Length: 378
Image 1 (cartoon, rainbow, N blue to C red):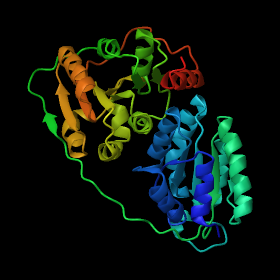
Image 2 (image 1 turned 30 degrees about the horizontal axis):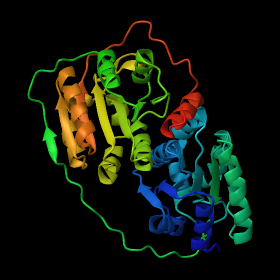
Image 3 (image 1 turned 120 degrees about the horizontal axis):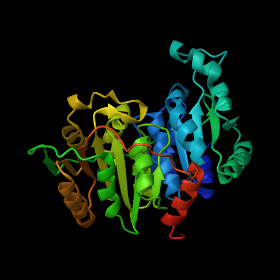
C-alpha cells in the first residue's frame, strides 16, 4: 500500500496542490490528504469537478480531479468537449469499483469492465496506480510529462492502494444571502446581443469574461474578440464551475460568468458549490430567454424556476433581478466596487442575430492567449 501522505507530498512537489472531486471509498485517504494539506473544492458531480479543475488550470494551477468510476461517465462531456478542444490538462484519479474477479455491488459490475475502455475512447493516457511507492513515484513523473504537453492523464486506482490518512477536523461555515431583489417592474426584454454589448463595454484590464456554449459565446465574439474572453464550445452547464475554479485561483482578477437558462438548468447543482465557496471576485450573470436558442429554439422549463431565490438559498451574497439594460449597467458597476459573489438575472428576448458566425480562433488558441492575459504577458 502507498503511504498516502508521502504520495501526496510527491504530487505537491511537482506542483499538484489544487484538488476537486467526489468521494469514493477507494480514494477516501487521498481525498483526506487533499482536504488536510491542499486546496480542495468538493464538487456536486464529477463533470463539475473537471470544470472546476480546468478553471484552476487557466489560473495557473496544476489541478487534480478525484472520482469513482461510476461518475466517470458524468465527466465525459467536459473531458471530451472542454479539455480536449481547449487542450486543458488535468491529473485524474478514478477508482476501479467492480474490478473483474472481485465481489462488489451490482451497480459497479459493468463500469468495472469498461472503465479503462472509456479512457481509451476519450484518448486519455492512463495507468493502474502501483501500490509500491518507488514505482508510483516514477508513474507520477510520467503523468507530469503528459500534463506538461497539455494532455490529461488518469490513474486507475484499485481497492486497498492507499494507507489510512486521518481527516482533520473540517470547518463548515454557513454562507447566507445578504441581499435579494426580486421582480418589481416590467421586463425590458433586450436582445442577447445588446445585453452582451453592455456587459462587454464595462470590462477593464482586470476582467475575464467566460461565455457559455452556443450563441452567447458566438455573439460575444462578434461584438469583440478579446484575449480576456473564453467562448465555451461544449461542456454545456459547466461555465460557472469553470469560473469558480478560475476565481479561486486568481483572486485578484474579476471573473464574469455569462450563463444561459438551458445551460444552468443542466447543472444547477453547481449553484450550491458556488454559494459555499463563494469567490467574492465572481459575478454570475444569467441571460434567460426560456429557449434552447442554439439548437432551434425549443423551450426550456426556466419559466417555472425562480433562479433568484435558488441562488440566494445557495449562499450567493447578492441575488438580483435585472429589468433593463440600465439596471444591468448599474449593478455591474456597483459589483466592481463592492465585490461579493453576485447573481444577476436578466430576462432577454428570444432569437439571435441573422447569419451569426462562429469564432475563427481555435479553442486552444483562446486558452493560450487567456492564460497570457491572466499572467499579464499579453
